[in-house]
Structures are given as structure tokens and as C-alpha cells.
Length: 115
Image (cartoon, rainbow, N blue to C red; front, side):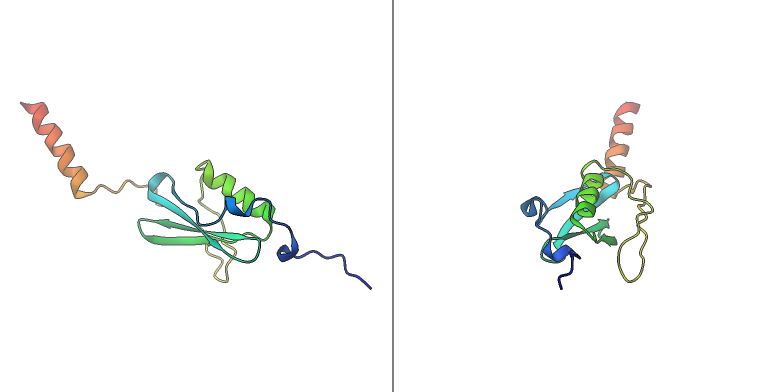
């Protein structure tokens, strides 16, 4: 008696090297890092300003490719539910954080404009 169910661990990876050890930055200071999740899948850790917003864990290779498409094209992440035990919902802070260096730069430009 044979079973015809297929688990994600037995599916051949489409392009496993395309997902391994990636790290890139999106808009609003959001960073993405991939982590090996199982034999064929990679999870995507989403951080913003060094705060973890959540980890997107795909169920299938198709899910993994769709997540990467969204991330590669910097599409909105708000509302994505992480496939974790906490049911974390990703919420990106789109308010601009102004650093002291940026404030000094703006002040320097306005002082030059006044002269």
C-alpha cells in the first residue's frame, strides 16, 4: 500500500542557491534575511531599525517563491501573517526617522540659504 501524499521535505528545490544566505534592504529601513528552515525551504526574517517584525515561513516552494517575489519588488508587507506559533502580523513603521546627522545636515543647508 503506497501513499500519494507529498511533504515539502521531499519536493525538489527549484533553485535552492537562489534563497540561501540572502540579505537585502527594502524601503523604510526594512531588512530581509533568509534562514534555512528545512531541507527545501528558507524562511524570511523581516526587521526594521534592528527590531524583528516577524519571520515569514513558507509551507511550500511555491509559497517561498511568492514571498521572495513580494520582497524583491518591495511590495507592501503590512498585514502579512507569519506562520509562527504567535500568529505575528507584520506592521512596518512608515514614519520617517530623522537622525541627528540628518538634522544637522538640514540645518547646515538652511543656514547657507540664509546667507
